[in-house]
View 1 (tube, rainbow, N blue to C red):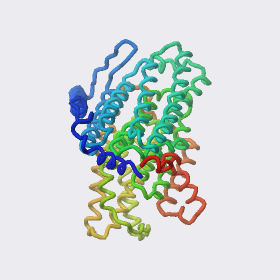
View 2 (tube, rainbow, N blue to C red):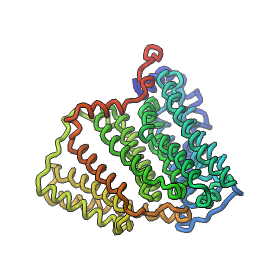
View 3 (cartoon, rainbow, N blue to C red):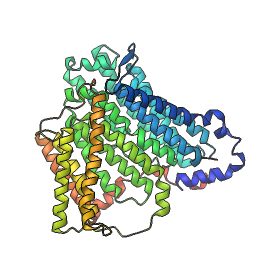
View 4 (cartoon, rainbow, N blue to C red):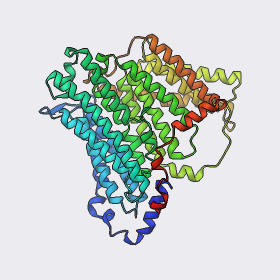
Length: 495
């Protein structure tokens, strides 16, 4: 039984109470308008002062700058959107009021985390984020599988808080300060071993929250969350790792741990894309997609482009929120069909290659990445692959004429890359006061070897080579299974 079925049952059982329960109270109805108001104020302030957004501090407790307002604007938009959607979607659901209050609490905890200058406030808000998200996952406390999923995910979130606390407190006690900004300025003066241990602890905390392998199973087990909660989780919560890594970017340069981020992020992106192809459940497929996108985000951090990672998390938030909120419609309209086999003629391959290269050149021109022999080449390569893949889908579409197949790829990649470049440059301006947020690394043997492995894995995936290897197929299928207690282990007790 999935979360939507459970919600519908609860709604049916409580339809007589609809309109008189907590979900219809005036305070709950005001949550969505409050979130929209917060979004409007943040966006207006950001646009009015852009590009020179003033920075101000409240002692060593909080600090507000362009990056803070950018994240505030993003998270309040997603929360307002989800809350408005939930107003109709969860109508009659007995835990509707609880959901709305948790949604507001989650939004405020993220906003607090972003502005935290004091490490104790930062750690507390990080812990509250995880606590609230686990409650959203188990929002239906009378559903046994939801309770198990909530407890299971909470163990992961508490572990992430523990690792983050260890890393930050090690730096605080060694540097003698509880201010995040002051701590970062003193990184170069701290012992290398101390910085390395702290960096690894912070990385573990980040990859737990982003469901990076081997910590991915919590996200696959969170399907008990109703669709609005899933949208908020995938559009906001998992992206918190990108914010965390950007805040502590200097530590990863000082500890030489960027290659670790590159490798673990890249491998996660490849494996998650493989596992996505094996899923038949819409939400499980979206979960695997999110894990892959988080892998790309971590990979960009490993290349030294923390600003690109922030752009990625914003765009991923919009994309994934839409997919989750529209997942019900996709189920209703989908029909079983045979997967298309990739067969491409030489001329079609030439067209795909041409537009892929053209897209990469345009991307490099607009963003400046990939114009030199450094880690920016890998981001340009990913753009070339993305444009090439989109071009392939167009040239294989039988309903399009030859002229349309020539014009559409160029129009799409110009529009897509142009929007990305605009956002990238805008985010870079807003993050200009943050140290080490865009420092491309010199090409290394590790990067080149991993780049080759990444390309090989990508083409094996696209060509379906994994299907001829039963052991790999079974391994990937097992790897993408949720915790057993979150899937119908208590069916007789739940009905």
